[in-house]
Image 1: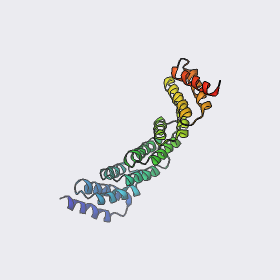
Image 2: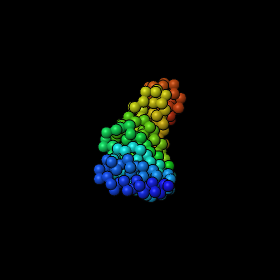
Image 3: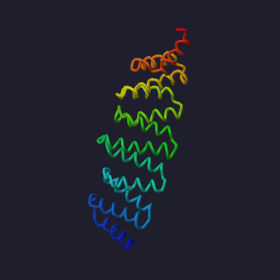
Image 4: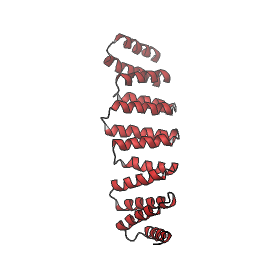
Length: 219
């Protein structure tokens, strides 16, 4: 039976002093505890020992993460991903961005912790300064929390990182609207609209906004 099998796996761990030899046996024990014996706490303890001994053991990280998610232990899962990220030791950019993406999603959607979600997306940009998914997520989050100065900055940064003219125009125009309506910086708003018109001279919303701004300033 499965209980006896778990006892055999546990006994094998005692027999092997070599940590490398223990790792696959401990992983099998953790899987057995979780899937067959439904002892999640014991399984978590075994998975944690696996990743402590083998920080790059991706299957153990995945299994531990799935188990914590099933239990809706979101703060523990966030901390686990932090440890997983530390194990990468700045060596794998793609995996780091993947892990950070999961952390940001947990912070925002599971914990409603927008400040942490923002911080995680900023960390993505330290890994990859032109990473558009992080820029766009930050734009959305800055808007939600009312951090309009940061929203202007990230819109400008995104505009410099992309090539699609229509998207650039949209970013500059939205930036102008924010500068005028939220920050009261009419001169900067006019400059943003002038950038729109350089790229798209017949952009009616920018023409109208610029006319309004000039009227306000007496130009």
